[in-house]
Length: 434
Image 1 (cartoon, one colour):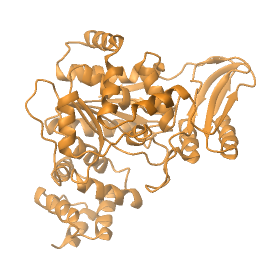
Image 2 (spheres, helix red, strand yellow):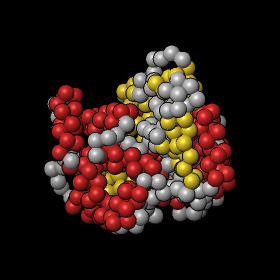
Image 3 (cartoon, one colour):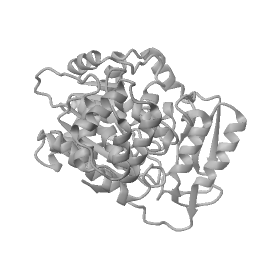
């Protein structure tokens, strides 16, 4: 195969046909195209883009590079959710058991965090004993039994995406919208789902700061997903501020349990409800937004999502006795420091990027894929924009492995807040819906 000619064609802005794209993906997955040539191709795509037809063919070729989930006939619809990642974004954790209780089957294939964005798998694996390594057959079996599985990408599912993402990450080509679309949808299409909701983040704590780019990505994802037979809706949500009051793997698990027990932060409740409502409407399980909201409220009031969450943990090997002991213990980090307000005022801003960087540098996130994660570290009890603070009020807590890193993080946390003497209007959490 003369792969150089394909690099040159894309470099010069010429389209590739379906056969060329599929051969490209198959040969690279099999190891017959060297990384340096594929890196050159990815850079050509970054600058020249892909036509919608090319993006579709790339997505399908990546989907077909490995095993797909094959579910038996069932009256319960198959659905999933994907987020582009944000600081404190724990929505998938309570949403998945809620969806299972609402009548969906949820084969959620999740990812790990990199940089300042937390990963669902890292959060789940902060639960003692829990495993996210499941074969396609195990995922299907568990979803059929209890309605839900939350696992990582397997070695045999979408291997092309795994290899391509590793190259994109080290060649500066991650922000390419066609490559993002192909990466996200190849995984979701491999699940053989019928319905999908997307949470596209924009703002200081997202990899797409501008809403225009976020909207462009959301529209591209929805359009292609629909063409591939998956009914899809997207939400564009604000990531200028961290989501919820906690950021850090175990601390977000604890906040998830608070939510499932009816004590969750208002912004997490709003986003979980919006995602669940969209899927109820897309699937036709509820006729309108009012009926969907009522069904979600009644479901939570019944306690079923909390029970389903614990059923999920048990099914994936969690040590439930140790899990409950840790929940009761409160703080797991050796050092916990509090940040308190020097004077009364109103929180006008809390910089999500700074919060994410603090958690990462405490050891709760990755600078590289090989970075060691410390699940107990992070921030919690964060004051939210719009809230009034009295002098001495708690603004947040640092959970750290030692006193030096805790003290440094505390000063950085103080710098992330903007406190003003008078209340200001806070921007909405959900900026748009596609």
